[in-house]
Length: 279
Image 1 (cartoon, rainbow, N blue to C red):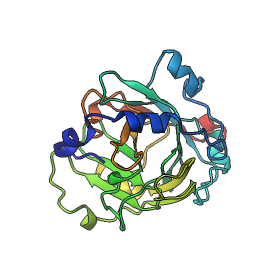
Image 2: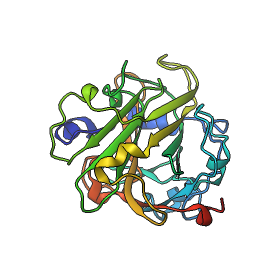
Image 3: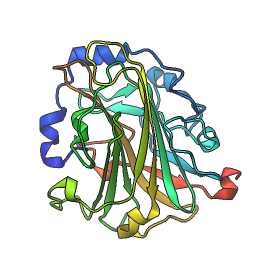
Image 4: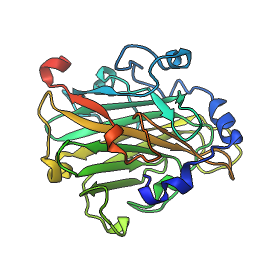
């Protein structure tokens, strides 16, 4: 999560060492369980040869059965989900495609479910409690803005330690105060890691996350969507490298400013109903 007033301090100047460490990370096939199908049918390797490097349109398919939250992406709903695999960095001279991140969104009558599968050569975490400043370590972030006319938007995070961050922002300019005292939204997340967490200097492979967000969390903007509805969304990530290097920041959205809260630039995600998803 990047509060607008501190983003300019954090994001500029990715170090060469951090970029080399990330790009050299081995692709952890065991971590990437679901079929890696993007919304437009091409794989992430196609991005480096040109074409779209961000996610402007995505699909949230109906889950006939909800996933079991165990951090293992082997549930049938993830196998049917369409991978969101176009991520880019935005705080360098040019936007750069970042491979190695796959995200999935599915839904049912009870909740929205998210999953992430990420390669990561240096697993690092930060925080000890809910709504801690998790972005001071590796973190997976999901931003959702259900209504184009209502100012409310939402942010959900999980880090490799399994800690969560959940926040309903009444509007982007609101002063929310102490994040740790914000109202509970009821989200959950379970994580598995492929490597050793917070052990500098070793060679890690990656991590996965499965999360659940009840529709009650979105009461400020109308609650559960209907089949065919579209919400604005962005999936973002902080990836920290060796100690002393700047983190790599990436987003699925085609951001035009240095803020993950720039919802004017978010992509659109369409909620398929049971018929569209073949359930």
